[in-house]
Length: 462
Image (tube, rainbow, N blue to C red; front, side, top):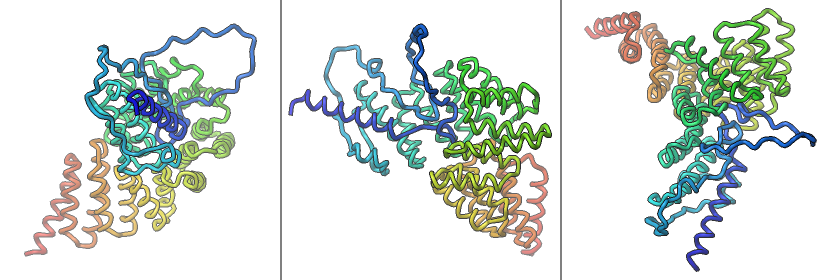
């Protein structure tokens, strides 16, 4: 077989792999597939003058909740300037074919390896890593997805798609600090990308402990305003603007108008209706609020919208309504970690600890680095007075805790320590309080409890 034919066949395989991945691997931010990307509007034929063509950009295409890899690799910018046709490394592909991709089968040993010393091969290797990350993420194999995106990032650090991929999978797992870093880097690479600004704004409005919430919400508002400036027809910018303002306590006509503008731009925008319902309830307009909530529930036809609307409902203590949406979401995507977490929270609130435990165990199986799922599961065990399992679970949370979450974890440990003290298990209490102090050494009451536990233990021994 001639060398040219081999090269042609290899290129054909790559194109098939890439096109197949585009077809089956929708990307999303956090718990939404379509958030931050307006739905395509049906266009009717017009006799208007032709549009001025948009100048081509050198940077990678903007991320969207639909796909962050839906453009072909620009291999021309990665080609060598010399005319040498020498290859410094042989191409090796472990079997991954169209049937595998179309059936969404991706085992841990399916890895595509390409020669690294040739710039063209480097570009090919980057695309393959992106495909691998997308497929793994769609299958909720977050460990494999993270490795693939990280590998892609190391190959082409100035291409934003791998960074978006990391931000997206961190958001899936509510790993907000890591998601924030990823999206900030994405904005550095693509400062004129409205979706990147909305993505970071979204992350900054998520609940985090140990941060200045006011400053984060103010920045989230500026990011949303920037997104609107860059893309005035994007409804998600207006919705996020309303959220950022409301979190700052700005319950004004302007905030309401932000939600209503989002709905005007996209009438089927269920999440915007949910946010509007929450605002109207704060204003005391109960009937109008209920109508908005019902509209939001009715428009929740896809998994992402179901999850995000359910989260808003839970913020208003509407757990029964949220539970229905989350169960529907899990029928369609049984391994979605955010849906599992919120359903576990709803069940815990209702006192259904047995089912909550099963749901949350599924969540941490899918997302082994999810701090929030471990802490909630630990809380479930504590409410069942299963203190040993509560401690074991919190220890797993400790292995993935971020700096901003240390004080929150200290509170969880403190609750377990209090239970040990109540049951006169002073040795266990001292151990737990010591761990809590290591997480939050500024809390004087924790030090007092640790000293008391150690004194009781010494008295018992003597």
